[in-house]
Image (cartoon, rainbow, N blue to C red; front, side, top):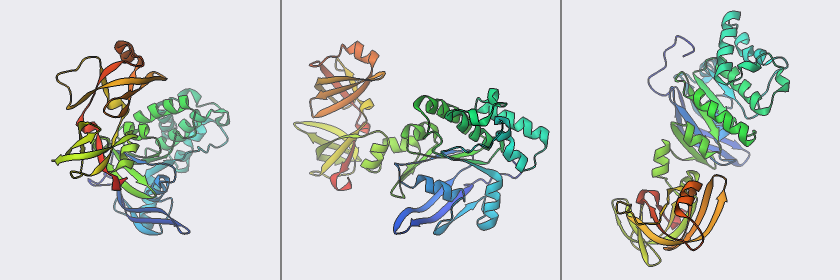
Length: 367
């Protein structure tokens, strides 16, 4: 913690009944959201979902049309005072002052009147966390985009915040710089001394970094929970797509028991998870990486296994995208090594295996 004040046992930030409008358009409509000490919380959704608006509101940078936000149990001006003192925000586009990187990292500490020696120590520690200690004497205006964003994050970390807010911190970087920055953020977010709130449209960032994920669509929370909860129990096809289950097919429910559905796909039957009744038409979604391909049938395999013919093999970087036909049309993603082992080619006959928990069925009215 940055101060001697003890963090409360419960959430340190609580937002309730938050509404934000722009003219006739509802930008945000969130009943409740909280931030817990030490956690990484991600707001995930497509552009326009409301994630950046929600971040600004709970950081007390934007006043909601209605509702309240409290920090450490304090709202209003007292809450804002505490928030400004104990939190830090990094936006998509870093703003750096003229001068050296060191001066930029130290500026917040100087404004808070930290002693010169402590300021230097904290700035150098923060720079080391972001891997920019070798840039401290460089002109900040000569930095690349990734370096500039690291300086902005180091400036925030030097303040030793109780909550670090990150609004799409890597969205303006090229692929290589983005990957490197997110790797560094993984270490920064997990230092155990602060909570991190991340707004992002990238599911890989959210699910790799976050302890909890709040998924937004049209300004509303669609589902929230631990990443594995969203993966295993998506609330609807939108959530399934967000977690990477973007592929789908239609099926008819033959029977239902304890959350498991027997579904008919052509002449075959498969087992999927979901809530629907016999005779219902459902949309079944899955992630291509959840399909396992083999030349021989494995006796200890999942309930869902069937023969299929390879109709297309396409390279996708270090992976292969394999289209198959049999009990419907399927797409699998496997490594090149797995493809070599299978001697894949168009016309190959393979066993396809997929766990029931990897198939998520939704009644068509929910789509």
